[in-house]
Image 1 (cartoon, rainbow, N blue to C red):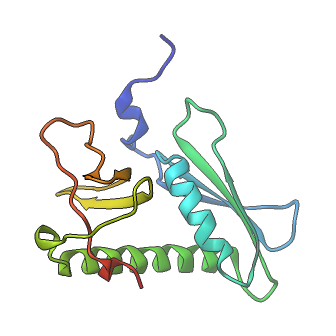
Image 2: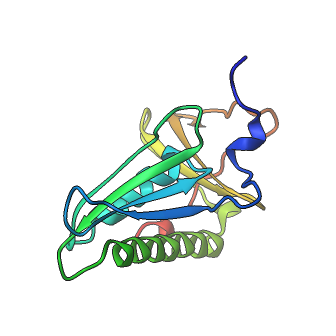
Length: 164
């Protein structure tokens, strides 16, 4: 097939930069940030965080081509605030939020959690593995969570200490 090898989606080649910044000449006070070996997951979360900043006038991202593993994020800010500063602040805030989420998760005693949810509601389950974070949406029924599709794996309830 025409699909590139899987390792090309995450492995940076020699001399390849993770991020490049180009000043956008079409609009004032704007930059294009190209992130190599990334996809919609990171693009959307960075865009959302940028839009929380009141000094960011525009933030959007695109994946130029489905077979290219890169995203382009366009940021426009007010004249007294640089797009690079906005991008750096957004990344710093995201790291802080995810660290807080992980800390609150680790404080919770997951094994003793027993909560009842109304039938049919959706629950967001966050599982911190050794190397990654897995987020799963599970539907609940009167007898508890829907069984996961991975054999031998069981969902556990997460205490409300995850919510601010």
